[in-house]
Length: 385
Ligand SMILES: Cc1cc2nc3c(=O)[nH]c(=O)nc-3n(C[C@H](O)[C@H](O)[C@H](O)COP(=O)(O)OP(=O)(O)OC[C@H]3O[C@@H](n4cnc5c(N)ncnc54)[C@H](O)[C@@H]3O)c2cc1C
Image (cartoon, rainbow, N blue to C red; front, side, top):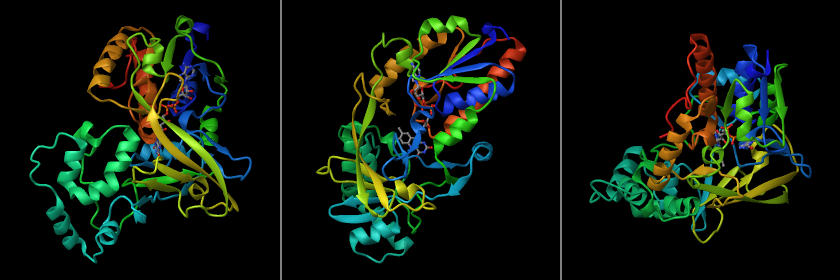
């Protein structure tokens, strides 16, 4: 193949790795570059040198999906160990079970309700005067009433998003965030697990193909586009255009690492609902690998704040202002030739890992189909708006 038939992929996270692998298997030569010194993107895991614990470097990642093809895909590259995400929260000097369930309700109100009694009780608590909730706060008050809202939703949301829940849209809280049984499995999905030796090993195996070359610590330049048959770009959409229309708003995270001799909190994730506690949660990484034994422990206190130009963008804000700006960037992107914007940063969306893989598989398939037809590849698989 000539250099013109080489494909450039920006980003060695899940998006870049899966697209690269799919196309490499079809005979394309793939060059993947990443500005970081490791593969895996934000799913990167590494063994902590001091404790030997597998650490989720950019925050806790639990794999969960209903997509059987995606589940088979990841299991083709690593062994997934059974893992159920069970989150606790500290609120007002007590520890509760999340998502808010029958145990939480009974403990919080000092009751012994059965499911129907709890449902009737919560319906009674709900603020029915709010007919058409517009904000996160109104939606929560209408669903669960002020006591549960104050204890479990208000402070956490305020810390996570850096603004009052009265400024966030109701759409963030789509469904009734309460269960009337004792199910404390955080996710509803059919398949759930944790890769035995971390996500980075899995992604390394996805990338392990003779047609794939990876260059780390290499930042993409736009003048590289012309040298390749096509570019799949999983970096920030606004970054591709050198932020010429301004910066899309993100929240970033700071992790404060500390170690403990033993078991610090008895679970992987402890949320902190009170605004008086400056962090949102503490992750104790060894509980993500319950099949391993470690005497020492490594934990991250997680702080959320506005993302500055030199910070890592984590959560897209996507309020009215950002969506208007996004529309302008999408219009610009659609005029580019030979570039497809993919992944969480390229499309400015929060994407779980299973959705990222699904979209990467579909993107590669669409590219192959378009090549067969002789038609141009689109800038996006799905419109990001
Ligand atoms: C705190 C947090 C927790 C999460 N927890 C879960 C979870 O529990 N379960 C779940 O399913 N999902 C979770 N996710 C989502 C998961 O992280 C994403 O699905 C996944 O990382 C998306 O992969 P990606 O390849 O699109 O992006 P990324 O992982 O961000 O990869 C993009 C890569 O591109 C590189 N790059 C960017 N710009 C350039 C450039 N100009 N030049 C070269 N390289 C560049 C970056 O360095 C990066 O490595 C979580 C996300 C966050 C933020």
